[in-house]
Length: 248
Image (cartoon, rainbow, N blue to C red; front, side):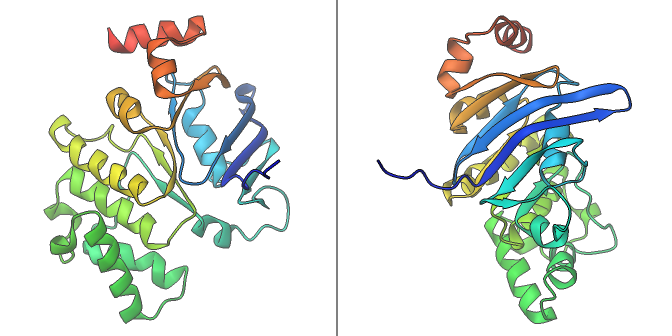
């Protein structure tokens, strides 16, 4: 029998509480190389907390997380090194207003990867070109639309050449007419083979682009499967109820 490839991201029995409020109640998740996994669920279901635990922006209470078999949780982990392998794109763009698009992307390359200035600039320009903003490298965030700022944030993550990218509601702060450009970039990143975990309410994008859809509720994964199964023939009552609300 052929040995299955090492998962790019693996989450085992993940628990997280805030005070007395349990937010994650034993999450198990495997994401294979080049897979796009789309995470749906109502507000408060634990989606964003799960993502933030995956690069230890939130510290899990218990459970284990592995990136290509290397353990991210537990003592003695070099978090700076691990986080270079786990790109994250947030709802808010988190750009430095006093730096140009190029400056925002080069900053992590120089500080984290200790790249020389010229090499960092070359890598940053390549990443900005990848997201369609090579001609905006000298613009400051205030001179860019929200969609362009989010694409700079994606370029900043891509420039570090991560193993997996986590997207936490990447379009929810954008005006509707700006959403499409960001989704186009995400399609392109997926087409180039990036492993992606996406928390979003962009249902049509999930149906079209995802390899697998996960529905979370009350801190647990309720159901998962191919987009057609989740959207057209969900097995669980809670999944059906959620989808009927958001599509109706």
